Image (cartoon, rainbow, N blue to C red; front, side, top):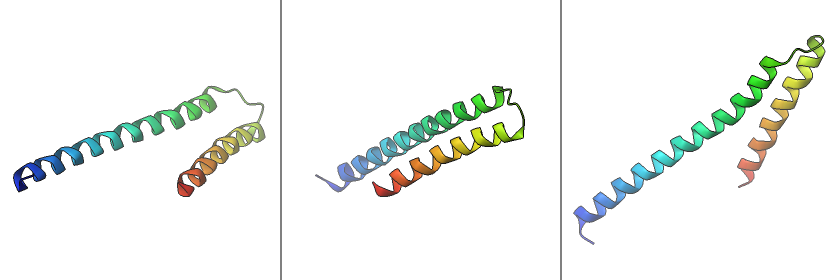
Length: 71
């Protein structure tokens, strides 16, 4: 492989990687936004119920972070 071909290949690989990373980030944000949208649409019977739902979402996020750190 010539240096020019190698450079073109690396540039293409980098572009694909960046695109995939961006798609993944968008997907992750859409997932968590959906959970927060559910909280917004709720009609909780007081602040305690809302806090409980927020705690559930943060626990889900914490579990996901732990899984990603193990991988």
